[in-house]
Length: 105
Image (cartoon, rainbow, N blue to C red; front, side, top):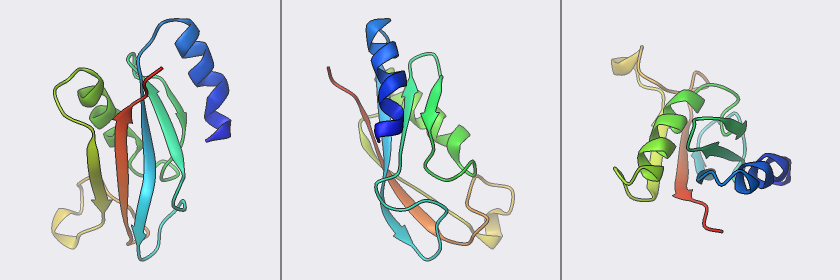
C-alpha cells in the first residue's frame, strides 16, 4: 500500500475521489498476494497493481462504478474458466477476491 501513497496524496490535494481495491483472498495460484492494492481516481488514473496486469482494466471499471454511486463497496472475484476463454480473468488459473471501496478522507 505504501507505493500508492504518493499518488493518493497528489489526488487528494487535487480534490479527486479515490477507490482502493485490495486482494483479500486467493484460491490456487495468484500473481499477487493477499494485501496487494491498487488505487483508482475518479478520472481512471491507476496506481499499484492487484494482478500484474491480468484484470486491472476490469478493476478500474468496477472502481469507477463504485465512485459514481452505481455500485456499493463490495468483494469482486476474478478467475479463469474454460467456458469464458475470452472473459477477463487470470491466466495463472487461480481466483482472486478483491474488496473495492471508496477512500474516505
